[in-house]
Length: 378
Ligand SMILES: [Zn+2]
Image 1 (cartoon, rainbow, N blue to C red):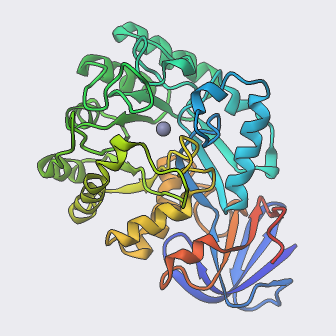
Image 2: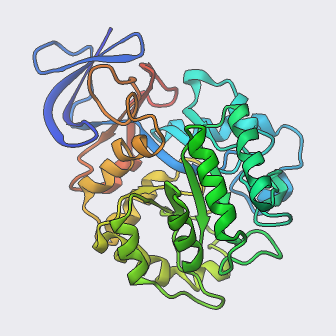
């Protein structure tokens, strides 16, 4: 049995003080002030392990993430990427761009985060990220692609609604699929009990995904051909809908800046973040960890920081990367909260993240199913 005491405890919803969390057999069995601690972490805050809703374990955050895919040892590199998330306190990751379903079989157990995977994202022939192996066209084609993924045991369906920046010949400001294909994919996913999320950079793609019944939308960055135009009317519709916006927040310090086409749009990305907050839309963070040098695996604490810098309330940000993310990932009955019956995936950080969100970057201890992760022995 473990009994972990910290000065503060964020349970996934609210902050409490001077509680002891009791862990037995990998699960939380009690939260109380009345038992002696076996681990006293002092002036720290205990949180549910964090959840990054959008990562790419197959990408190594280097200069040529697509070329590197072809090198031998991809599964081992993915295991090491997964361990980097865990060391940063990210105990659950949702992989939205796998290759050959590798993320489903890494077999790390409690030595890595829990990995939820979409398999290869569904995309048009030679469309965005076609090299991951998920090309499908037409209503029948996308339905078959969803069925194949469901049979493989994926946890979510990911569909490339628009083009993307990293795939030559595709365009972020243009849609790849028509509304009928999007609706066919969403209906098929839901028939299999799976959520579906869409990669969408332009307003038309965001609107189509929302209208097709997608559960969440990645990026929502409002790119146009040369720049950006934040569509406030569409954001109001998103906020009134059940769709959760997965914000691509988080940039770690890096000598290599983001690509020029992204840099030109940084002001637009920030404006969209502020507009989404002001409209009150439901949100989580999906960092896109792995896609380039400013997006190393484990970058999620920087995403939380970026949202606070853009005016988000720290408590809302903490909820978004714990309990809200668990719900979006359909693991809300066992992840994202500190309460009896939940998995003992826990993160202790020095200080108080409500007064200083950068505290999330200072993990003292990470527990995964009750086991303390290596390298977090503070
Ligand atoms: Zn991505």
